[in-house]
Image 1 (cartoon, helix red, strand yellow):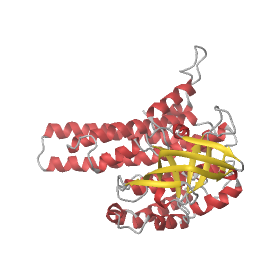
Image 2 (spheres, helix red, strand yellow; image 1 turned 30 degrees about the horizontal axis):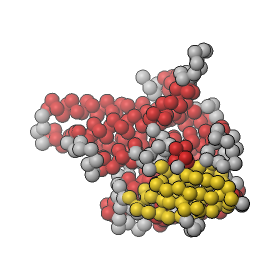
Image 3 (tube, one colour; image 1 turned 90 degrees about the vertical axis):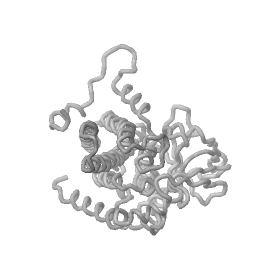
Image 4 (tube, helix red, strand yellow; image 1 turned 90 degrees about the horizontal axis):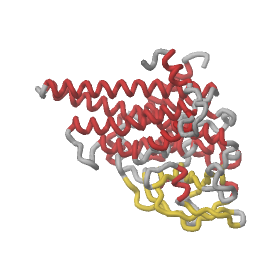
Length: 401
């Protein structure tokens, strides 16, 4: 950008809308008495904050990445987990594949109304929190005349109860097993689509995570979305991972801040000085790790926008956040004295959402395998690939020490 004005304007717009529509009424949202997700999405759509514009240059859909990362950061500070999930699915995880890969016809029919907030989008996920490719294998997809026939069950979907359509990842029946995953837009009005048992973890907004069944659902072939190349598929997944990293890192920082306030109140009430001092040091250590993850995300975003690679940098940033998602809430729960597995409290719900229901469908183990593959560490002995530029760039900038 030539100046900071567009970024500042976008940041003000995002913060103002989240403050007026969510933070000032977060208790209403959490108790299920808010005005409803569809109405909120319309306001975000009218403000132009839901994902990539339909008219964006298909060669570089990430041009608006700054705005999306700002949106992710601000959403991460909202304590109503289910509401955050609903907005994140609409802004990024259900719509990014259409923005990158869909035909103009599919974009006009499904993406345009979703980005305008006029139609609610859903995302297929597996019940185990495993990656999208694993979720794809739990579906049976075959070609039948001019349609695809989808059959499967035991899946989870975001925004399911309100969704006009669901973005489904599945195996391409017209290609070999080594082909890139295919996405299919499945309108929820089609015969055979059943939404079952909405879960309400993190706030009683129906449909944030619900079971969905496809019983011989016939979907027109034109609703299939295929990446143009492995690179565009990777670029789109990198964009999803960066959004997830920014979203969950803000949530982690919020968990640390809330716990820090609690620890300070214990000190004021005359808690054991040594214990408070030790726990405060642990929180400071965690906040330092957050700062290093922020530097990794910033560097990965710059590399991605500059077109200088960035795939490994994105993976490292997302992996760092995934690690923190496992360690920080556990430490904070111990400080609060609520470390019972499955305890129903705010931090437990945030931890579950980041680890079990991660919206980009990634786990630290999967990310680490991809990093090792990119660095050549899982290849036969031979010349090793040079380390990615992320560490060197960040060190030069003085962001990571």
